[in-house]
Length: 293
Image (spheres, rainbow, N blue to C red):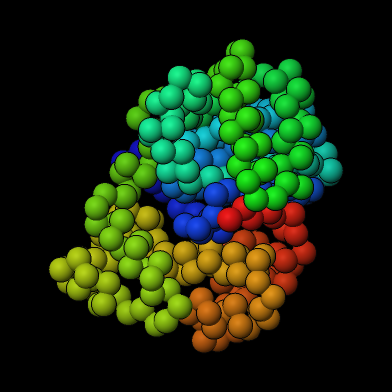
């Protein structure tokens, strides 16, 4: 087990199977999201956050004023506060599915540099400040594009990045927390939760799915996630809740019920513990999401 096993959490991103990509464009005054990973690619642009701490796999480094990193699927990462003192941080995050580009497309001559870029992102890639400055207009425009224009802009952006000089590979090969945490059994558990998170989900029901006793299943989940089953289930439920809060005009109580919480106070408490803000505050903090179907 790698050192990450004690504190890495799996994030349930708001990206749905029907989406092509998500773009988050936001201003913030600090970093507080823990080390996490998810099955999607993530391109993260940060401006005016000098001395914040970049963590990707086993790599850790203070960043400069201009930051652009591409992280592949299931690579642990986060940006921590470090000694950053600026209160006007600009962050643009682009997430897209690992199967957004079919192998037959990536194998075409024109796309081979992009294919190689995506392969390198399994260790995380940081780009030079000069590259970040030159591509900033393209990144900022992503939040304002619609439909196919967004997909085409992503392809163009990845093409530019694939040819950019001075790419820095960040983490050691093989530091992949999800390789340790998620085998076939965990994939089965996650798929079952995805399909049933809206209702009461007893431990025994999921243990039976893996043909395990409750005790063995509880030990299995704790070993691989660092959480009890209830804690892990609630973490995933809150991930789905963030999606509903962003994209739907549902009340907070409706979101709570839709995500399997029958007690609003309990939902608010768990949401704040995981996201460090209330559901209502989350809607205010993250208005800059663009979903491309």
